Image (cartoon, rainbow, N blue to C red):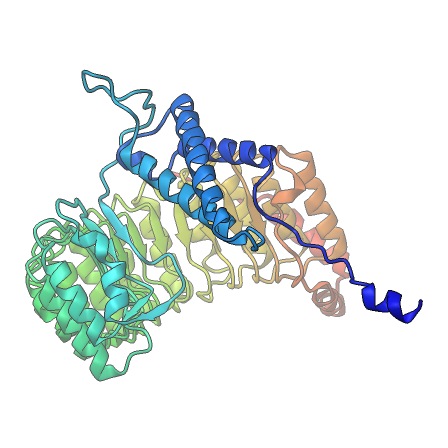
Length: 548
């Protein structure tokens, strides 16, 4: 290429014009706007829903107007690529669509709304901000979060502010808002609402909320997961002192010590309407349990009492058991994971004789031993006709208590769940339990006899007992010493029954080797393992469970 040609060469440049859009693009936009205008949304629920015909007419009009306006805009930037016109076009269509949505459907001359087919907006009575991730909030965020509560004429009766950590500034915003709702609130959930705050700040926040809610006539109050202790309980003193109609009170995982329990008893003026009282996972101890017992004595309508994992020993357990005699409407009792011991168990058995309406009993890990378990089994046999759940796991129960347990279970035909895990029932006890469950018990769904030194005979008997229960879902015999042959037999029994083998729980902790060791020990004492097991099965076959 010579010099002259080089001087005259100009590289060809390409430019892409974004405006005007093609006819197909414009048509597609009209279709999308039509769909958006005629679909349910927060605007349609408030202003009315457009018919598809009206939505299309508006979409076509909006697109035409915006296309003309954007084209005029484009004329003012002839050297541009049209991106500014596209932005203008999109912005104006969105603005006009919003105007149409807020205007709602056209009305006929006599005022009837055209083509509005939508359900009546329900009245909002529940305000719940607990669904998101846990967050610390400041005053501005509190103002925004709680803004629905400030709407004039709102009908909120139940509020849940848990899982949000309020600081003092946020509490000062929340206080007046909550105070304005005093006349309408019936349920307040403030569980886990000061997480991560220093003690002084947390106590001040509690006082602000307490003062704001003082005088509310509440039926439900949840202050769980706030590490209250005595200081926290007293910080809520204004609120607690004003409550005379509580039906549900939750103080779980709150560091309720002896002093805190006494403060609760002191501050709440009346519990004669109380139906649910939960104190789970606190450090209450015996003295605290004695204070709670005073609350129970004044709660004749109580239906659901939970005082699990609260470090209550024999003295406190005895007082709780005695106080529960007042609660003749009790349906659910959960006092598991304490250290009651035998004496408290015997006292509890006397109370259970009087609680004829109870359907769920959770008394696992109470150190009941055989004596306590026998006393409770004998009491339940004579009372509690509609028992559905019995959890008596982890109480060092041996074959000595098995006959009493079996006789009790045999007459409890409404049982849905039976938990006997982590005891020492062995095959002899398992066979008795299995025999007790064979007849009736058509509602049984779960049987847990894991970690009970079971072997082949006991496992087979339990499988046979549940194999034809129509609603049965889970047989847990894990953590025992069942041979491979025994497991195969259990599976075959279940397979041949009306339930499939799917109801058999995991067996990852079954110790096959342990059975072999036991077998060797038996053989050393004068009998082969198989012969010893066969002899046991033969003897147990003739055992009977007495039923009234």
